[in-house]
Image 1: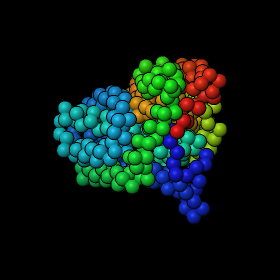
Image 2 (image 1 turned 90 degrees about the vertical axis):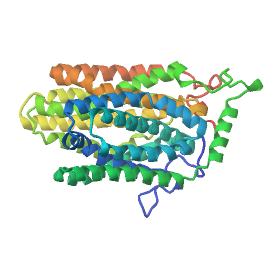
Image 3 (image 1 turned 120 degrees about the vertical axis):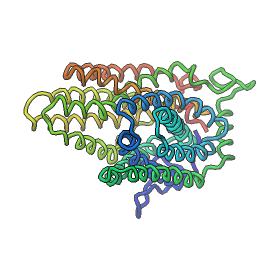
Length: 442
């Protein structure tokens, strides 16, 4: 991993403004904020636009988005590999305008077939772009500040989603083709804005190439052989430990489907709580992430501490599921209390598993192939987001409290399993080296 012009383990915040003092991180934060505001605008109105303005049925929209999600799963690795070859920044300068064009393209869709094709293209660009941005961050920021920086970015992005969702209320109130298309045009503008900010990001192609060369040299011994005995960067798809960690962390990522699909349906169908609790739970989750994600990342500095964070987070996710199950019993006020407590416990688990996942995805990767490795890890998350709604529906929604207990068991088992899978010497490190050391070379 390369270093930025500044050093230090923490992203410092300017005293006069709530932005990091580091110019590179400050630019990344602004990019994340602009992008997430646009995402909030789009995500809030897209389903209603597809059904009420384009005329698609809810079933068609669900099917199309599922197919698009599958396309997104397979986009991460090839996009990541391309980023390793041409450079993350250079590739993102192309991806941003393409994402803008894809979003505006929805305004011209009038058939299911066209919707599926465009949704697949847009999702592939989005998922692939996420992997490329992750690789860019991995190479641009100093190793010792990686997790805290990513925590800051996630907090800012959640704040941006809240702002974007609030702005989209106007379009929801108007409930018109013009209002919905306006939100999509604004989302497209956000992609272009991010591209402009990216163009000024203080990471040159020369610096990136030098960093890659330094990483390769650091892992190379006599005769051109790498320290781990190989002559070329490791391939993520053949890295069994990385694949196992990716798969198990993807299991923990099912928590997103619990929050966005299982819990809303459970509140309405399985508890006596008012439907307004759906919004209340989402607000609690977003605010906690904004306020506490950076704090939750403290102490997550290497593979061992990241594994422990994921294990603790998994237990909290399991506990959240058990509290959600308890909301089925008792009067409405008791259900409201259980749901709020469950959301608190769930979010604490989410904060820890996110921080742990970032470190594992970086420290277990070959620093010469960050694009491909981040592509694999992001594809695991994308797969969890695709199958998550089905898993949660077949358990918690269909079988009530028993289904919630099953989900709790899945989370509780996945945490220790991930810890066991991540255990071992750092990839490419000499015997006795500390975990994560190889990934921090350069």
